[in-house]
Image (cartoon, helix red, strand yellow):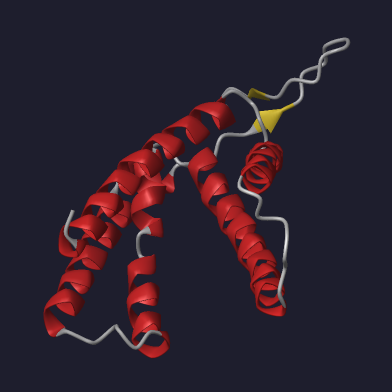
Length: 175
């Protein structure tokens, strides 16, 4: 597959897969799992998979100083990722439609585009993509700020008094 086709293909596939992930997260959170618990369980499962990969591919040997520095940077990336996941998942938990949160989080294109111009030599400013980004951002803001559910109150949780059970359920809305 040629390079100019490869990255859009993977980006589109990633968008679909990440969309499935978001719908599953919303389902799990609606079933009562807390956001910190979800992140912790995903981290444990991800960690087990990572260890299996490293052992299977014999990647635990011969750490050089450069690899150690990259590993340290990986810890920073992990912390940023967990914080981003927490904020994103809290948004999904309280949004009536996870698409609203996904759309709003897509505003990161401005940050990534402008930061890339500074940090990566291969990135160059072009007016066409920049105007496209501004139009997309306008559409996202229009969609998320004008939807009827933007002013809805987040669902309230209460702890039922049940012997031996610690289950969170949604409280009924008092009108």
